[in-house]
Image (cartoon, rainbow, N blue to C red; front, side, top):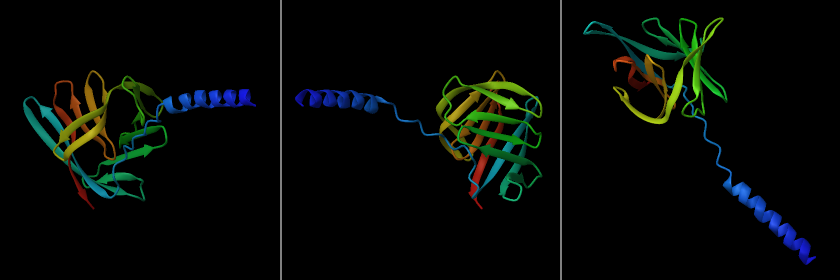
Length: 175
């Protein structure tokens, strides 16, 4: 009886070591934009040294399941347990793992093609835009572009390889 007690105690001790040393499951980020808010997004175009700005104010439209801009543009986004994806009116989309790790590859998808978009270079970046400071951003980078995806706000900033801002969330307000 005493021997069985010692064996069972030893087994419980060994099992507890494995249970307590298992790392906690990483919380999966939610990148979806807040549907109760209005997002003003500025797009910057450069002609030599001259910078041109185009602003679009996006409201979520439930009937279309997408974000519609007052200027006629459209953004849509989807999210499941594994991926967050977003796209514009052009029909392509980018997909990021919601629990991405530094070094993960990111792909873009079109109607009949898949292409390498870049890789995750950070999952804890902080970035400032005109709309505010965003923490715990996932950064996706390739040779031409660096993009910051903020939890609960989606893509908040895109910077080209020369350090020029291409796209930026400039204001977030209540509906």
